[in-house]
Image 1: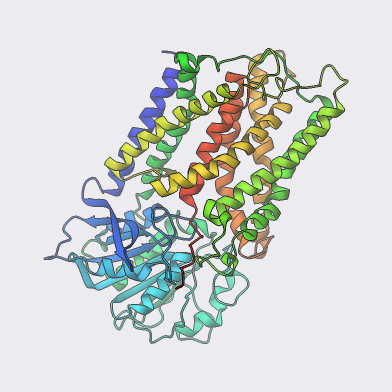
Image 2 (image 1 turned 60 degrees about the vertical axis):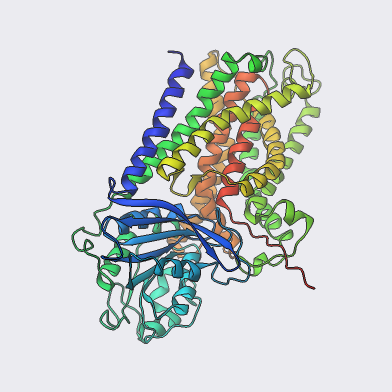
Length: 613
């Protein structure tokens, strides 16, 4: 077998077997029914979600139920660890994409983003025990969960707030049990009026509904489960995102609900006996298979398909920077990315979205810009990408003109990978069009397979906070509009990376490995330093280094997504530059992958203002 055949085979095995494994875990080996649901609310607006129904739950033998609400800029899939562990213990779980997230539209006028309507849907299912219904929510999901709980206090048995604060006044007499899982190193410090999340037990507002004037003792029971006024605070030593993907907070939730509203199975499985990590391994296998398939199918299409054959070229000459300027360029380019991160992100994220900075999920003023690009954070990421790329290009151009008289280092369109002909500077648009079609074919193969696997197994390709999900028509339209500016940015980035490629070694293999390493360093090392500075400061002081709320804390969290994504971007850019001797195919593939990821991950924060009259 040829190398690309081996890579394709491995990638297909990973995607299929990983999906089978993830499905087996989330269904408990066939004992739990997992299906996607659509919930009609208000004026026909639809909320989407996933319903987990354990074996034996029926109208004759109803089971306790939990509404699981993800955090903002997440999806229902982020609640899968909680859903898997609760459902295998006999709880019916409804994990939803609340308003503006994933496949759910912006819900106009709903301060709870549709959480109450989702609770009503869950409570109306015939197999649900109406005396045992809880709400569990992480971050913003816990905030809107507190609104739904107070509106349905006659039905709610328990509220579990994970890294969240209550959006409504509470008291010790509120007739439902409350668990607060307050991480000690939360980036947002969401616990009342305290500046540090580790001081949550000292919060006066929290103590008020725990019914005490003393500092709260973690894991101590306040109130009583007997009359549904129980209050317990858990304080795991971790950060905001870790609360979704670590065993301790999940065990805390299981333990609390087992005391508040036990199921037939909840006592038979230890809270720390958890299998959700195997589900993550399965979806990670699918994600790795998807990435591998890019390289495998890329080689297949370029080498075996006549239509794309003319795109296969070998570079005849280069114009890499050498010596001290080469080292300086690498360091400067790597530093530009984190140094512009907060400033460009905030400017692009706030300038065009009137009203969004006043709070999440508010209606924004309709403009031509928000109609074209309705996702605030996607716009901010692309704006930041274009911003730091523009600075790199300026440096790139200055160096270009400074080295025109140096025959060893001067460059032209061929050397920079911008020419479609390796023999002479030339720009043929039909070849660029072919590069775009090649990129679409390469990305399209794993995408179609994902569509099939998602339909059969109700899974996607993801690992922790990085999900790749099928697009609906709404998101595909956004994908096309966001793709254009990001493709321009990645073409420029790829040309910059060619400028710092390695030609120092006598071995082509050594030069190739070194080029991969340098390109990764340029795109990722600065963000790694940013994360280290942010989180060493958080662990030592209890607050983030850059506390501009909510952008500062959010940017630290987003780096956990950007670093692995930029790693893939650097490898794809390098690989396809070497295969085609230009930047276009790799840039288009990267733009498609990152745009796909962002439009499905980020919420739509633009809602057309209603017409009056």
